[in-house]
Length: 161
Image (cartoon, rainbow, N blue to C red):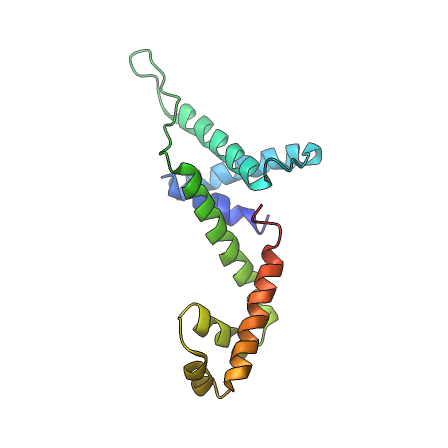
């Protein structure tokens, strides 16, 4: 719930839904998940993320069909996704997972350790300049970066599949 609700909401907003409609879509997807997860069988050929994406798109399609009246007797119920839709979903998924993992694990580190890693990785600063600013050695900066990134890899392990 903590991991996927924000992602579902983000996907819904990116699909053009207003905030209230996006929240409704998230609720519908979560309700379906509550029903389906007890019988969910993991398939090594298909990731949970792909299944969740398909469920979300199906619910989005349903929502669009409910809102859209038939035009001249023709109902437009086919959403034409761009050719790079899979790449878009993959990038969105990975960015969301990393952001959620970072948010959840930040409190597990001392502020200086976290900041040392953040400055080096996100702000692309050298260990020397960060060490000078934080009053640490370059070795301590590299160790902090290593610890945080190892933990991130651990948190994300298996979620890329």
